[in-house]
Image 1 (cartoon, rainbow, N blue to C red):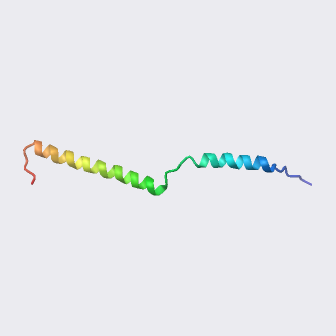
Image 2: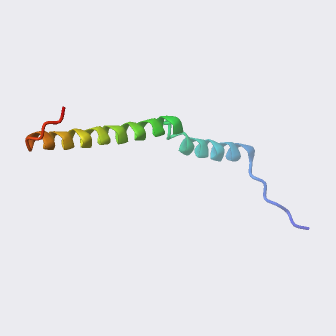
Image 3: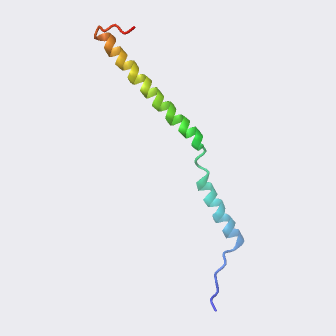
Length: 64
């Protein structure tokens, strides 16, 4: 007959609380993270387009 070692209830609750502490560090939701990444990409694209048009205007090419 094999006896299984049972964990005491207080120890089980303490370990559960420790796991939950580690898990709650990330308060940024997935939706907010995606919005932030898209905002950074859009800002980068706008900056690249602005630099391109600035270099064309410095070269003396009339744009508009």
